[in-house]
Length: 342
Image (cartoon, rainbow, N blue to C red; front, side, top):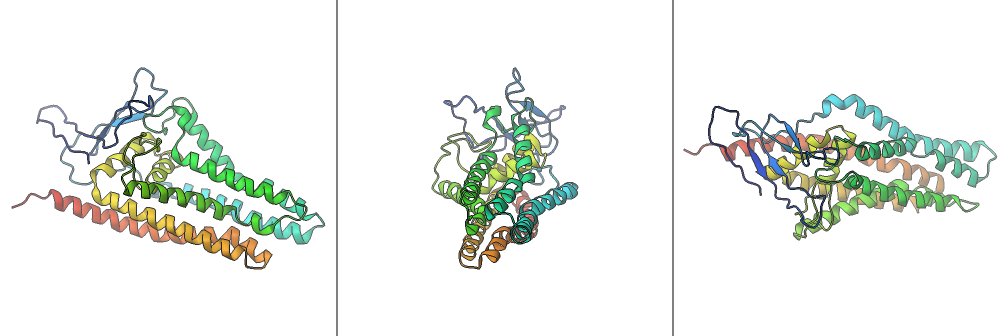
């Protein structure tokens, strides 16, 4: 656990930093030592001032050493509500309504061969998601990126992007194999969303199990260098998605790191959320797989492209109030632990 270092009182504005638990690896030139801050008012500095384009901001300074509340994340989803609704509406239309509409419209409404029907459907699938994938790559890889992983080179991208890439490869293999035969296997073509859930959920659980057994990170996991203590499987996904897709930038990566190191209740919350989402994803993917291979083909295709998204909506609906309650509880514990004893 990091510790607080209080500065001596002076007439100048005070600053304080918290050394990170995550050690740097001397064998890895991309791992730079970074202090972990706590507090409210911030400024940022680069890890390598001589070459600021290679590294994002890696240090945050705080002016208030008293820490009356947990270190702020300085990120508000409410201000981005319209953008989130718009984006996810496009994703749902693109990945739910379009595949189903093309399947029934072309399969039963035209004289096209079944192979041609699914070739057309596959070619149009996931347009929004694929465009977002490459936009994400550009945000991370471009020179002067403000959302890049702390202490890494531009070619590293981030942990979520590599996981997303592997998931897309698995999905593409399924779709390509499914459209090769003259009579495409409809059940296989209903599996892509479940396959993506399997991939992401299993990875989260593996990371969490390794963390439980105190196994050090075998590779860099976003801002955690190789050799650092692992964190809950969901941690890196939250860091990467908010920093890149949610425009939180490198500042959010640093603030999240500080919050995690400073607050034990915050760490507990992330661990619980990891298990909640990972086991939930595996459960719904397993249920969907069973239904796909037991129901009538048309019903199986609809189930494969709808049930995972319905589940994600329900899990998100449960997660939001839980996080609000947990953050409120975290503040109460934080203040109680720092209240002067009589």
